[in-house]
Image 1 (spheres, helix red, strand yellow):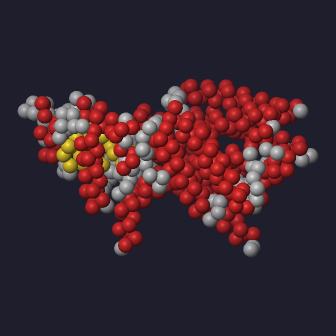
Image 2 (cartoon, rainbow over the protein chains, first blue to last red):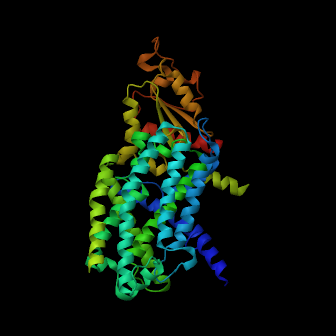
Image 3 (tube, chains in turn green, cyan):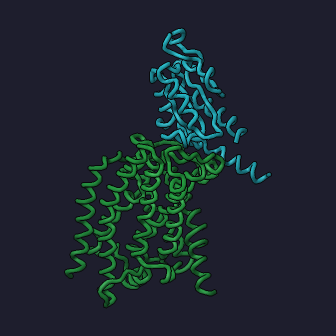
Length: 318
Length: 145
């Protein structure tokens, strides 16, 4: 197969595009079901997020008088496209290795911040005061958690680079290959603080309690999403489903990409995704309340940053 | 045709609820909250979700006797909800005015101003009655999709 076609398939069919779309919706469904069960409720059917999307397809998209129509409608599209590309950048151990021409870890970092920016654009273009509050909160939170992920990625890059005889590597394929040969970073005590920092990062990046501050329903009525309805809102739901896949899959690729080849490796990967989802998202969001933006801001600039910096320092010094 | 019908059947499994308090004493609102928050009366199993924005809503639950002061705001809010939508009057107040009827300060019944599809009487109605009202509203909503 010509390489252009391979790249196209990896973005549109597997693991990006269709596959990530289905998996993301399924993960969201599992999350809602598990959260309901933990609260002692019956919960919605597993396919509920898909039902929601179909429903939104039948509704009308209303554009408020105060909005900038073009930007208002383009924001969700930007987010979805960025995430569909990002999924194709993350390797699945033993199953999928991204084409190096798609980009490396640094490109992925940039793409990961696009949904946040799409939400900011959406909030400010909607012309709603709640959207504006959501915009400012999203920006503050992003400033706080981006530093953490950059340090985590630097620690992993340097560790792999040193071991491979280079200074640093930002190729996810190389990072995964190195761990497959020499053992996962999850079992490497030097990387444990970085793993912990990543565990704090991903609920914030996914906008999940206790860090769902920009979209707080009870305070600012879902902030940037307040004015969206119909298919435009559905696109935001798709974006958030894809982002779940990207972030969980990135965590696995950075710290634990150890799996047999072929279908067994795929099953192991799916099991790890589900584990991360249930333990790190569903169980957390039913057990604690939402932080205030100032609390979250100072929290991220203290503990996760400290943890990531600790890992990085040890990697650099040793 | 068949595909469209099937998609509509699927769509009807995701009714999002929106509460409008038009000057209620909060009794009905507490009962509404129990249908979502108490494990015994979980409405999420019907696919329902309480949403914060009128733009996301499919089924509108109105409580209270429509106070004169909030009438215009309630009507405006109702207009903001995208079609197709279904309106449910929860409690006896929006239906007749309840204990506030004949007061100079209320505009009840609500159906003078809005097309009400389902009435759930009670002061306050039991959660089972509210859920039955929502189930009926879903039937009506499916026909409108």
